[in-house]
Image 1: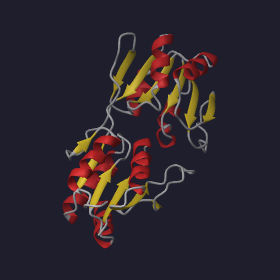
Image 2: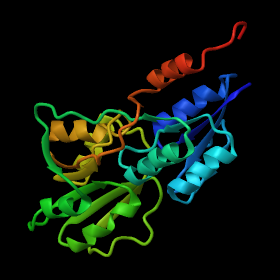
Image 3: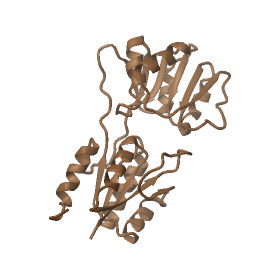
Image 4: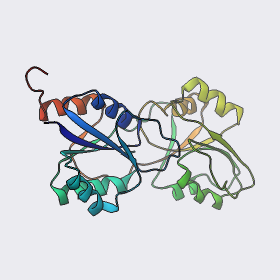
Length: 253
């Protein structure tokens, strides 16, 4: 009998994990996306979009669909979803593990300013007009309307609609990975002197951090939220190794 796994996704690691499990005959795997990205990458497993109705709704979905294991592979800043996953696991009795990539670590030459929130990042930009590269989700941009004296360059997967109500903002739509050499060209082209970013971790978006280091650009880094204490792994390979222990292959497979 196959074991049923539900992955809460939205990250590169979630896609890689789902792709690996789709090829594993031991499992029936499905993927859930929050629905914030308008054009998600097509996946080789059944995929649903949208919320469950909080922790109780997710718990009901787990029970109704015979899920044997829940994997939280959401973005490191998706604190509410991670909290709902932990509570749904408690309510349903269905085990939960998390795939959480490590954050970036400051190196010699990095000019990082650590802040707690997007609002704090706006304040950290200061009162002197600056040329700012915003590497944030579309839903997190509104506070920057409170600092209209800066010139912004915004990069997002989907178009920012409506645009920010500020005098100067340029918009780029692109999906990573983003490489250091390309990011140096981009930051130089726009004359960027400050970047606002989350400490997302991983390699796909690290290019801007490395480029900022080489160009001496300040990075205002929003710190990670505190997530529920659940069994966690930092790589797809570690999760697959864990599944091999929990669900050993039968002889002959």
